[in-house]
Image 1: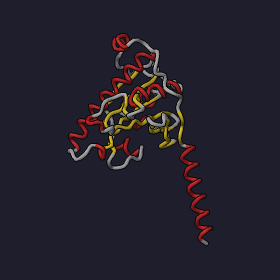
Image 2: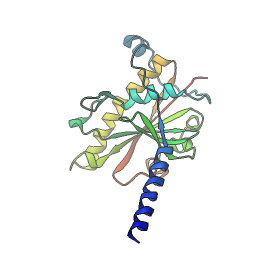
Image 3: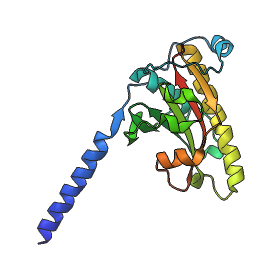
Image 4: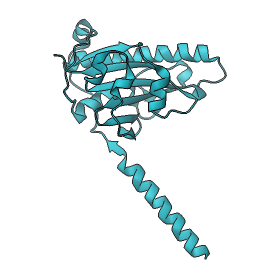
Length: 211
């Protein structure tokens, strides 16, 4: 009887692992060389809301997410942005027509959260449901110690500012457009992403091709 129970446990673990593997999308290695010179990218950085319905390539998505919150020092696991006291509280979710995904910096992969197209939920403007990608910046408050939620939100907002600027500069270098957004319904996005109570949506950012 014990051997039968053990067999069922092993089968169950195998099925769970297979399900997780199927929902994990490995991204190509980010291209960390090339692009426009920094000063040129800064000169061309701007907000734009005139998007068209055109997908980004997997390479562009990999490069974009690495710019936002990738790991640039593998020996220490530190990211392309600074965080206060190195709490590394941030997460980046990506909403596309194919569903919503969590970016996993260490694995350079996407973990599928839902197959539903939730782009329209990520903002109040019409263009969010047209653009290729909407990034959702989330802070895990449990990583930020015993500070008040107000302070945690303010600190996370600063982290989002770094991420947003990195994305702006990548878009300027790549010939894409972007806009950083605060006109969102945080609770609706948190529900769509099935976030636990300790994780909070702070800002969103839209990325895609111009008309």
